[in-house]
Amino acid sequence: MGKTGAIMMSEKERDALVVLERVKRREITMAEAGRRLGISYRQCWRRYRRYEGEGAAGLVHRLRGGGGNRSIAQEVKERMAELYRGRYEGFGPVLFTEKLLAEHAIRADHETVRRILIKEGLWRAARKRKKRHRAWRERRLHFGEMVQMDGSHHRWFEERGVKCCLMVMIDDATGIRMSLLSEEETTDAAMRLLRMWIERYGVPKSLYTDKKSVFVLCEKDRENARLEGREALTQFGRSCRRLGIQIIRAHSPQAKGRVERSNAVYQDRLVKELRLKGISGIERANQLLALGFDDDLNRRFATRPGEAADHHRSATGIGLSGVFCIEHERTLSINWTLSFENRLYQLASLSRNYSPAKRKVLVRRYLDGSLHMFYRGEEIGFDELDPARAGKTKTPRSESRFAAGGKPAPPSPNHPWKTPWSTKELMKQQKQF
Image 1 (cartoon, rainbow, N blue to C red):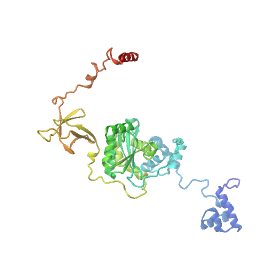
Image 2: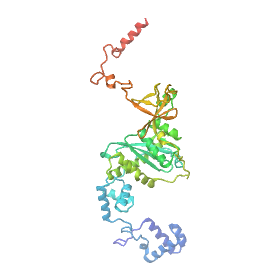
Image 3: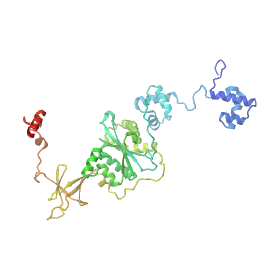
Image 4: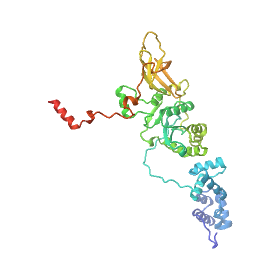
């Protein structure tokens, strides 16, 4: 109530005044008044008694003009702003609220924190851009039915380290995720992450990936493989085929939007966590991911699947080391030797008097760097040979292709490259006659 005796009432309070005045004049019943105001019969009686005793002022909210019961003290607001400027600059309101509770025992709603930061000029919401309409795809119903996989290139260590790539897997049905940081989005990194997932949850039914050469071959390579009679598979695709995992190719980033949005979560939360911990190396960052960071995200954001059945298959009895490896086929010479990665190897001959019955050998480089060779389905021993002793001395590339000084030799004056096109046409016509 102001100095003039006027009462400031909201529209809802004015409606209550009109209805209760009709009850006072006995034009409607108390039950009808409760239905019109959207409150219970007992609550309507309580408000009516206050109206009878205090008049219109009894319908005004008791806290009008004062602070709320859960309002934050000014000292706490100043403490929040001080912490944000000093240690948490750039943190979003939600993440900053979580840090306030976890590390400083300050409890507040993230919307309240957002308003405080905006008032202090420390936060400004990003402008939302119009997005192209796309059809919504329902989540898969079962855990392990489809897992999305992608690599996110980002400055994860900001200016403290080099730019690298975070490999992320996220289940489509539940949002459970797992990640691994590596220098680049490589076959080695993809295999390591998938093996970590299998060792923890089992073999998923399918993987949803983009069209990068790590996961699938491009159309040109697929066609060349078909013409040559080879399998159109990458090294990663071969590993998935052995495990019975179907690779589904996404035709746009929006198609695998769940893992793309997960990348944005990591780019926000992981970057700031690495900054707080002072981490600037891939090894320590992977320790942080494995020892609780991913589990914390799963507790916050994972949901229950539509159906309880788990579509992961057990990996018991599967030699994962022999599945997740780089595999090549080499031809075996008659003296049981082969060349691999510019090195010469002598295999343990199975016969002293005869050359190999089959000339193909599978050479596998495991993820731990060890080399293994398989002949006729069985692993066979081998030793590395000295190329000089084996008569396989190799001229260095710089000497064989380039002249002295390490620069390409210039073409001769009569080289075909130096012959004009008109002269070539004249020579063709002379040959015809």
